[in-house]
Image (cartoon, rainbow, N blue to C red):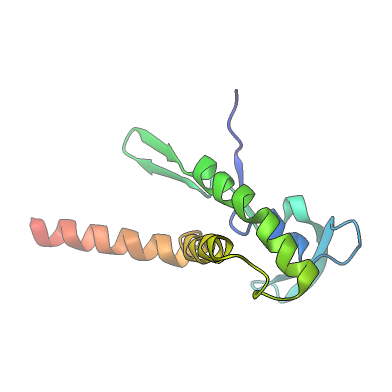
Length: 128
């Protein structure tokens, strides 16, 4: 079974919350580099090839299944919040899962990854 190469850095369940059609298939996207906005499918938005894959020497670590599991777990929570328009309707367990998902979302940013790599290379520099 071939693993997905396209990795979302924003879960599709969250992107669908911002959809422009009732079918939740398209969203408006703003490109910060060009300053232009356009319509994109949810499937093709907030995505990058091998974004959740880290290469270390000859080893390749793919974290996409880990993020997929979390995304699937919170999908119903997001739907529940969207339909009720309130966090107060969530159980304690659902609130904990939502907090965990928010923390995990921070790990899905380029800034987080570059910061970690900077710390690792600085530590390597200090050790030599």
